Structures are given as C-alpha cells and as structure tokens.
Image 1: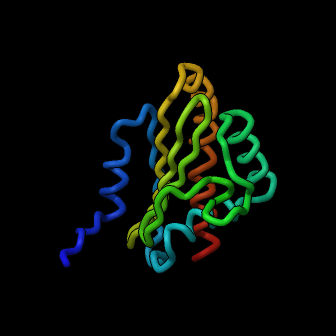
Image 2: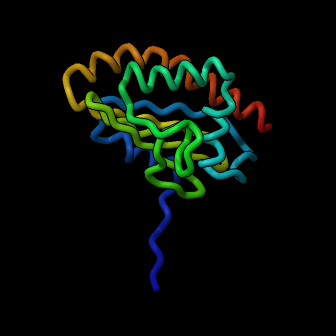
Image 3: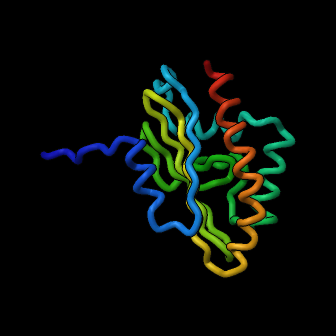
Length: 153
C-alpha cells in the first residue's frame, strides 16, 4: 500500500498561512528538543504559563473574542481549544466565535518550535476585536514559547 509523503512542519506552516485574514508565526530555537510531540509542546506553552496569564488568556478568548471553548482540561482539548488535527510533528487547535474562526498550529522539528495563528473573520467586527487582541498576541506568545523551551532544556 503506498504511503502519503509527510510534509515537514515548516512547509506545512507556510501552506497554512495562505487564505487567512490574519496570520502570524513565531519560532523559537529548540534544537534537540524535538523528541517531544507537538501536542506536548502546545500544552507546555499554555498550561505552563503562570496562573494569572492562563486566566487572562481564557478570559480574553472566551469573553473578548467570544470563542466557544470546552472546559479547561477536557480530553481532546488544549486549555479548552478543540484539537482539529494531531500528528507527532504538528497539532492544530481550532475555535470559532460569531466573529471569527481561529486556528493555532504548533509544530516542532529539529530546529525549532513554531506557533502559527490563522484567523478568518466571520463579521466585520471580528477584524476590530482581533486588532486589539493581536497586540497582546504579538507580545505574549513569543514570551510563552521561550519560557516553555527554557523549562524543558
């Protein structure tokens, strides 16, 4: 039986950015730490954040962006985000609100850990709300990625 060629995580990230109304990707060096799955890293980044940061993330996702999330530690979820796709090298989380559809893909390879975010606006107000949220996203996510890698090194 023929096998489907595996797409390296870095190439998958570039392909995932196409078609989004907003897209960002943050990568931190993580050489030698790719023995852990992308799902492990996704959890390490958000669940490893200090409690006040996790609380603020959940409050922002649920009450500012209006994302429909599961309970925080529900099986098949990462901090309430449903897992859309899970492979050893990449995991994609997907959440929707009346304003937008958001996908976060965490990928890991021999070089680094990458968190890609893609947002599709469902309504004009989604663009406005995301413009404010993106300011926090751009500052916080690289910090959380570096913190997770430092803890695991």
